Image 1 (cartoon, rainbow, N blue to C red):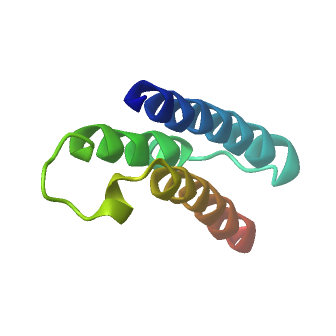
Image 2 (cartoon, rainbow, N blue to C red):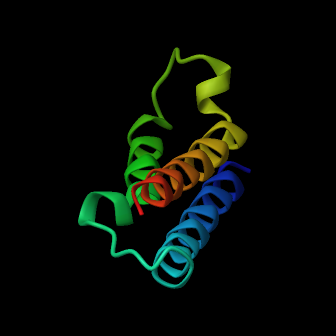
Length: 85
């Protein structure tokens, strides 16, 4: 079931965008720029662009790798903005 993996990655992306917006606005009292605000979406775009390539390592093709990459990008943006505040 390849579509279940894509669904999981897209749901995590949506949740991370929502969490990023809420935490930045109410937790950090910061306004994010366009690139930072959609960091999970950029990683998801990379996932969509590379998920059908042949010959790539099993790690990069796994759903868990991309979910962790999206969560890490979200945490990274929050950490950078928390340190700047």
